Image: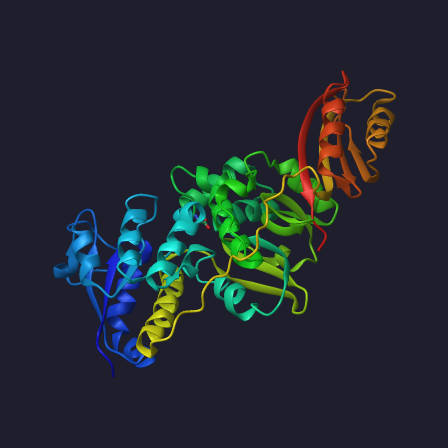
Length: 426
Ligand code: HSE
């Protein structure tokens, strides 16, 4: 066996504590797999006395992250947030120390800078845990599919919103009640903004798109719409038409660029992603030669996410022992992130209208004038002089649809456009 590999852990939250546990409890097994002894030399935290999900040797806790990084061979960063995580990771990479991180927000914003620092010093940077928890998706994109051409990725990459939408679908709950349920169960934070507004999934989509299309994208390249506007009526109407609403991250080729978006989406109940219930995540990948692949599993949680962290650690530690370079990310393609205007999709549009003669023909005339053809139309009249209308369109350009909606919204007989949701068929 070669020399001992000294590991510094930054952060002892839910995932950090579980990573520490595995490093200590499975130490002998990890050493066998790596081909060298492994030692957790310290855990950098803000408060050395705080309660933890797993209690490491108290002597391991320190508030001096820089000294710990300087003494280590490998750094595992599980603190989250942009700073001081960015500065600390750069410190490690610039000193040639390989880094494992689960920090999606940081990687989606500063991934290019961090990768450049790793490349400059010959260190490795791995971050499987940043996307979809335990699910191996980044390594398959970077490694297993390196000889193929990915055309599209559809992902349920946020467990909290999948839980909420699944509750709405299976119990008829409102968004507010399903969110409260998710908070009671500990899925959603007290401030659930990052989840329900789609920002968490958008970070993951930027990371996935970069690896899938060998180009550099950041969170600023992602069009984001969360699920706060999805109503029980939208969910019921989708169900009546044979669909389920999911918050999908979609990364797909769009002409000479790539379109990356996170938005509520209707998918047919027969689609593999429709069977992803509760807080589970799944990523559906379409590639030219492989065809369709789906990766499924727990997208969050201490031990599942720590599993991905340790997988990265063993993989890069093995390479330290063997002396070879890691499998690098490639971003050799200059691809632009595209706007939504040219995206072609079907749409489900919900409207609350006056129940009067000519309202329907007015709606269909405006759609026709914008080149949008109606696939199905459903109306219910609650006998208060109004009608709820649900139109599913054939494929239409986003810009045409938006223009038609703006005209419809100006009609005296239209009280409210209650929702406009994309429909994905495959
Ligand atoms: N809050 C995330 C989710 C987990 O609900 O999936 C970490 O990304």
